[in-house]
Length: 364
Image (cartoon, rainbow, N blue to C red; front, side):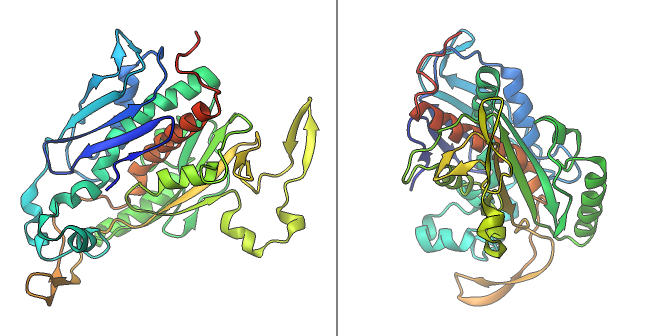
């Protein structure tokens, strides 16, 4: 088991979906940053269920109790630890699932690994609910990067159900939150809502892609060989439940390109070296090159759907059927947008500390 990640900035989580609560800790966060509890709540609310007809109707207020890590209103260098109580878990929805694993979920692999001792209610510690402390703590890193270094992390849904909404980048990180479906413009929201209404009417779900662009990333971030920018981000991002793919820059489109098309040509603009294109997503050799960091992730359709599916009864070792009840997202990508942003923030801050661009005590 591994519930901790990071090098100079270590992030850890604990708890489970239907236990007493969930929480997390950031160890190595610089001292001297003013904690804005309203901002932390804002980001937690962006991830929490029940905020829209297009998300799970589980009602969790996600009240965050900050246990340690600050003195007065400022971080003090000790681990920032938080706890979030679970208040609206309905475990009876999962009684049948103890012996009948849900297709697409980690139920069966939890059984393979932990047998009768597994935590099967609500997915246990594999649940998307485990991203709540990630967002709460990651939002602090997000704000530090923006306030102290001008680094802005923008994430939005740029495709859903196989329909791409275009290449335009939102003006700022707040822009996608004007739309219920976390898209870039009203037309994209209209199209995505049409898709969501269709899958909701059938008790189904749909996949989507989230694009992230990070502006004003310092040059030289990344620790070759195994802690490169892509390696570090991918490790963190693949910990997000339901995330099944990551590509940087042109990504898998490189397989159909020539070198003359793919290479980002250099030029000088006001004494600064830039590239005319950004096919490599702001990273060369695993190290940031000063261009915007640009990557996409793919979120698979929510595995819990209200359609009867074939499964097996692992106690009787016979085939069975299952129709999932309970409250589930028609598109988990919508609530994953802030999760991707905050995961990116934690990873970039860790890399900046490793590169000695951020000290243990912040300078005013």
